[in-house]
Amino acid sequence: MELELLDNVLCKLKQNSSVLTGPGDDCAVVKIGGENLLLAVDQLTMDVHFTQDTSPERAGAKLVKRNLSDIAAMGGTPLWMLLTINNGGCSEKWLERFILGAENCAESYDVPIVGGDTSSMPGTGFSASITIAGRAETPVLRSGAQENDGVYVTGLVGNSFASGHHLDFLPQLDEGRFLSKYASAMMDISDGLLLDISRMARASRADFFIDPQKVLLRSGAALPGALRDGEDHGLIFTSCSDVRDEFTQRFPATPIARIGWVGSGRGVVWNLNNDQPFDMKNSGYEH
Amino acid sequence: MELELLDNVLCKLKQNSSVLTGPGDDCAVVKIGGENLLLAVDQLTMDVHFTQDTSPERAGAKLVKRNLSDIAAMGGTPLWMLLTINNGGCSEKWLERFILGAENCAESYDVPIVGGDTSSMPGTGFSASITIAGRAETPVLRSGAQENDGVYVTGLVGNSFASGHHLDFLPQLDEGRFLSKYASAMMDISDGLLLDISRMARASRADFFIDPQKVLLRSGAALPGALRDGEDHGLIFTSCSDVRDEFTQRFPATPIARIGWVGSGRGVVWNLNNDQPFDMKNSGYEH
Image (cartoon, rainbow over all chains, first blue to last red; front, side, top):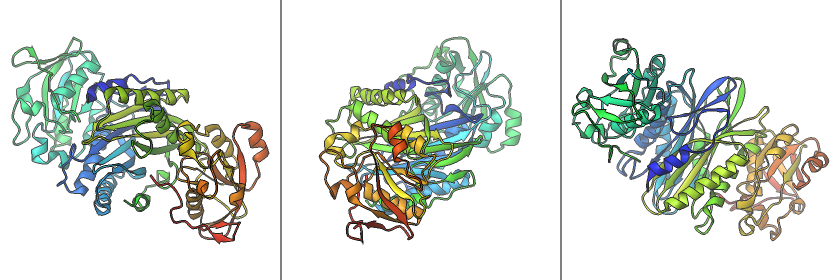
């Protein structure tokens, strides 16, 4: 199935005046009671997002953290979650452990799971989803990149699956809120650095000029594959001010790199090593 | 799988002070910007909630209306939705038609779908979920029934599946908002009248005394089965004032019946025809 095509259908859904940002960003932004409410939903499917030998607690925590990362990407604060479970063949014990993993992780961020829905599906599969709600004073969209901004990445890139990072990562909530004061555009890296940068470039209607050598790689990762691995869950942001020194003082454990800049254009991502556009075929991990 | 047991796990999840009502009601109620925000999520799975020969447009609309009915049950106004699709074997065309059905229905209620997530699952299944957000000035919970209140049901009961009502029903949003001024407790009938009444009785820590002969049956429905059929999506409410005349003037197309009263107790549902508690084994349709 062409998920990208389906996403395009979602992105064309009609909105109304209460909606500041509809489908296509890390979160939707809607207005209620004078607040910017952030809303997002993510799914986790067995044999797609985790394997059957993953501990259910870690799988549950991963689903929570993927959603927290969507809030981080807007510079927001997470508030509440809803959990759905759709179960084919998993045992009751396994399901309870999955929910416990999700709950313990959510509680450590003081984000209560306020509701949910359980359903059974034919067959042996398992799927879960979390909807997250949050707030942001000044939500940062992926469409705001300006010509001459620098392009920055926080966290390491590549080898997320083999290293276990896709289960162990920490959503960069504090980093996202700090960066929201400086970033013109921001998103989290979920489907591969290159694919996500190209989405930011198209949303911002600007060309991005990237030096792959500047990308900070996770142990065991190598170019060019690391640019296409998924689930890094660091942040990509653009800014006209270089905040690396202050960022590093505040977040010494979070690497940050300037990997390029924004130029005029319509959404092409250029490789500064050969002055050619990156080949966007099979450019990332869609799931 | 024991869904009820899993629901019990969900109901015990820890909450914080921002949460007025957590898991276990038709919607969670949380506070933001001085508003009561309602949040709920519902799933729809092929071969569970609809069959493969159901038109995808009607299935998509059903999912939207199930969620609208959760808002109606709180006396609220729906505002926004998020849609997830988890697809095994359905064609792209089928998926587009499903989304179109959901969108057209949502649009007719001026509730934009502001975001979503698409994923693929191994196998041939299909599952979708919608998260709904809304607001309510005075949300009506299922836990507020008081001794000597009357017990009322709006809409007809039974034979929902064979009659197609489970696809064609209209969520009682206007009715719910009107009743929110009078009802001490309210919920929608999703898993069977008897099972849902027993949930309201337990949540309210009161016994309910019900006369099955007073229940208004849908064409083709018969007692006692109609009490256990699911997906009627009318409203059950309790009130100390008899609003039937005013209700019928405002909503002439929506039947309303007084089917019993609330007494002291701990959550037992009594059958006034034989002065025995109803047998709650296999009392409803859980899904």
